[in-house]
Image: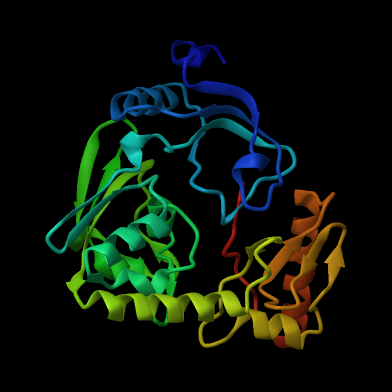
Length: 292
């Protein structure tokens, strides 16, 4: 791609994306870029918009299915220190969008700051967690956000204050090309009380999920007032398998990926489950996992 010639130091062409995703599936990206600074990132973003190159941001890949054919255009990975720093000042925690959510939770707990601990066990980066407002009935990340730094298509950094932000069920209005950082406002609490809640949240979250050695992903959103896992189970689909993809018997809203599986197997299993649940309960399941 001649348009990216000046970024030779930080670009990998036809880079397989499977190794960057939790499911370990999918084809290559035309170009995978690891910017080392905000300045490099801004230059890449400007070039992509000027040349009309598709642009995506890849976090830890825990909620992502890449098609076997791969991804056209540019994929950004904000894994360098310029995008992963976490700082604490008073009740405010500031984190780069490439930082792991687990690292932010740990830092907050070390400073006796409460709120995010109920999210323990949720995999993802700060950026991805904000875009889809991760959480459950015990709390969501959006309720603690005070401001978010973003970058527009011109490479210009802007700040979205709290009154500009909207968070809903697994959704937000953060549709800017790149999220750079977020600032959270938390509450002081006793460290032992925070740790106790973290342990409880961890046990509850992990008890029903597939075993840690399995490559698995959560697939559907819960319909309002319903459980996607329960609907799938009641439709008799637990342990249903298509190729190397299988509905988990521990939580039917997780698909387990076995050796030799392809993204096409997962997509076919998604279609099968959605059609069977629609036929049985007249409920249309919406995807939680992102498909590229």
